[in-house]
Structures are given as C-alpha cells and as structure tokens.
Length: 324
Image (tube, rainbow, N blue to C red):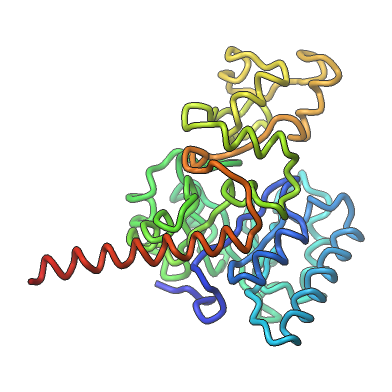
C-alpha cells in the first residue's frame, strides 16, 4: 500500500474534481485544511484561464506556507480523449507550473505520464473495471481511482470490496476509493478495505467554497439514495444525477432509461437544453443520504477528522476485545 501524501495530509482524503463545482476557492480551502484539493481543467473555458487558476492556487498556498502553514498538495483533472482539443495545451501548462498531481480520465497515455513524471509529479487515473486499470498500469500511472457503484459523476457499477481487492492483486501503487464516501467513518472504512486514499466528491459540493448554486446544495441535502439516477442520457456516458434535477429539466423516466444520449435541443425546449452542459442537470452520488447541511471546508474537515478518529478507536476497541 502506498499513500505518497501521508506526511502532508491531515486526513487521507482527496476532494475530487467536479465539473462546474470545483474552483480555486474550494481547492485552496481544502489544501489549507489538510485535504488534497483538485479541479477539472475544463472548469476554465480556455487554457489562458486555466493558467490563471494555477497561478492563483500556487500563490495562495505559497503565501499560506510563508505564514507557517503546511498546505496539502493540489491537483488538476485532464480529460485525455480526442474529444478534448485542449489536452495538449493544458498539459504544457501543467508541466510549466509543475502541478503536483494530475488526475486523468477517459484515457491513460504513457506520454502524458512521462511528461508529469519529468518534474516529479504524479498521475492518478479513474477506472471502473479491471481492463481499464490494467491499461492505466501499463501506461505507468502512480495511482488507480476505483470509481465504484453509487459514485457521483461518471460512476462504475462494481462493489468496492472486490474491486479494491482485485486492483491490489496486480497493482502496487496508490489505490483510491471513490463512491458514496461522505463521513469520516466512510474514510476509515475505505482504509480498512485496502484503499490508501478516500476520493470524496459529493460531500464537498455542499461547502461554502463550492461553486454549486444554492438550489443544487439544497437538493443534495433533501435527497436520499433513491433520488440518484444512473443514466447515459445526459452525457452519453453512464453517470449519476439527482432525480429532481432531471425532472426539472423536462426529462422523463423513459428518457433517462435509454442507453443513448438525449438530443436536448430536439427533445426538450430551449431552456432545458442548458442541461447539455450539466448546468441544470446536477450530478451527485448516493452519499447524499448522509449529507444534511452545507458548511465551510474548515468545519467539514474538522467534522471528518473527529468521525475518522472515532471510527478508528471503535475498531481498536473491537480488536482489543478479540485478543483479550
């Protein structure tokens, strides 16, 4: 097992990069409070804007360190797919600014891994099955993010217990577990299952530093596991969305049960067509079941730390009882 950030994290947690939600504010706050903060490069609509964010984050964390703080590293998510025309330009900026962690999605490319390794950075890759994981391992990635059933965004369908164990059977790098992690107890459970880091997305949507609108955060707080719909209708790739947001955009159950992507412009009115960019169709994972509020990152991390320690103490007590 390998957590390369154990000396710089308060908790073994990565605040996952979320489309339209994660920005510099969330990244900086996460890193200042001991959680590895990340954001998608495509949350900035140009490579120039992406570089502005990189500079903003690095300057803020450097200033924090100058005042005696110990910030966690930060990372960016790059979509490695021919449909993303910016990947080469954004990678050049990642190398220029020596971003500590790059999270790749929709493709693992050895040239990208080599470029990040050239300055000492690390690459973690999203996987939903063994075939994708083996390809990523062959490309030389440093970590595999096991995106399991119930996760927000582009989720998989596998149960976390066998999935993590299977990845560990052939991969000796960092293993991250993603899917339905919202509490410190969940983080402890992920470690017990063999993960090195917990990959937490939905819980960080409901923070003061998130870019999610108030209505989005309220919907998460009001939702339960049954309110999460897993469908390919929105983006063409299976992903998890909040049922009330699908219904508000005009989608019917018949629409989201289709396997093909919906042509919003033809099947819905012009207003609902905004959902094409995920602006009104909101993603979340089944971890909504244990989210009832929205609070600053500092308070969230404090809560997670207390819950994490309590879970570890309870487990230690159980072990002691077994050996007595």
